[in-house]
Length: 134
Length: 328
Image (cartoon, rainbow over all chains, first blue to last red; front, side, top):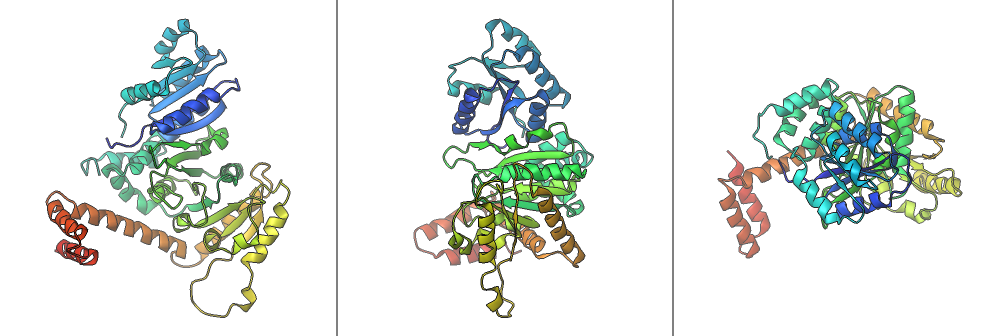
């Protein structure tokens, strides 16, 4: 593959209206040299999947604080697989209890980053695990 | 070109994208952005079936409301059942190469509508308000049945006019209170507009801004003598609000009429000739560069460049010699 920049979708599924974390991450990943598609607040799983498909992203990063992660995140992974995008790396961040992480991993979320995770760590994880999809 | 030519991958992607696979279309656009051999193969197949879409450039300063206006135009087109595509370009960082692609945020309501395709592109160091592969991307969307393709440029200053050489029609979006009438007299962006839209018409001062623009853009027309020297366009000035959608149906109707009027003329219109010329020139430059720095010529080319750096040879003489070497 060519050494094009990694393309990442940052979205906030669900109804909570607090997007500071998502914005900090989007900005931080920009500074890591990524191309970041930012779709903002209140995204339905269909909006996230459709944006991932049309943008042909390597990574989908989901920020969620509302507590609906066990409903929304598996649904997004399922929609991505239906669109033949099962090879896209899905990561999550926000407020997600430790005990829910195994279920999310089972559903297809590759990693969950809690509050305070250094952005460099997230970027390195994405670089390492995103499929090369040139 | 990073992949071996003739791998067949490009041809397959082109076929599937034409057949309606959005996944294939999306992957093809990625290949085009990365300028792979597969992309060239696909473009060779798709170019002959493109050419019927109306490619509309939407440009103007940052914060003028381009994304919101494009979203409103998409809504009007969808009401009429027309398939629409959007290419939205945002700048890449000159430092890290990273980018925030944030135009989509205003267009997310179309998720689930298969006849709307929105793609963000980072400029990747290309100047002029576009990404280097915008024209090719628009041609692919055109070939895949999107009859209306909007190209939203990065927020532009006064002289990023490249979109006019790629689009059939160019809309320059202004907002109220963005400068006095002297701004409208300056050379640059306004000269390449087919239409000027004073957006945010719901805000105070919009009518006045439109009046000022109209009077400045037509200033001196009555004393302009005959002659065939190139002239700036005389764009129509419209008021619209992307937010409330006021004036947006009228804007799309004016764009449609512009496109139809050109179709009635015989042969390709000036904007398409300019686009074709720019495309061929771009490919010629790439091909020449590839040939001169190909493995068996590279040493010779580099040696000449070194002599230019040492001021032993002038750059014109070096270029002439290199061109001479490319002749069969």
